[in-house]
Length: 95
Image (cartoon, rainbow, N blue to C red):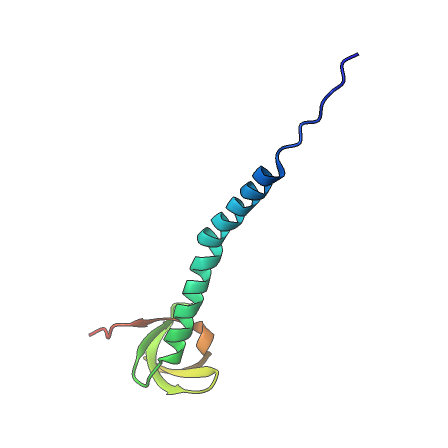
């Protein structure tokens, strides 16, 4: 009678593969996301009056007032109070 042998891989190889996957996901997903979050925090921290900004919804205007957690932006027809987290980028003045 032939007995089936279970072939368990080397535990060292298993840990190396697992470590490789973790490194792959860190450099592919986690590290770039942290970098984007840091850039967003710097953008929001450096907002000044008169900066031309665009929100994540595509609204463009100039900063009229900066508060703790919100920004008032001047639009073509009026103004709008938005959360600082909603600022996507600073824009060059269009003229």
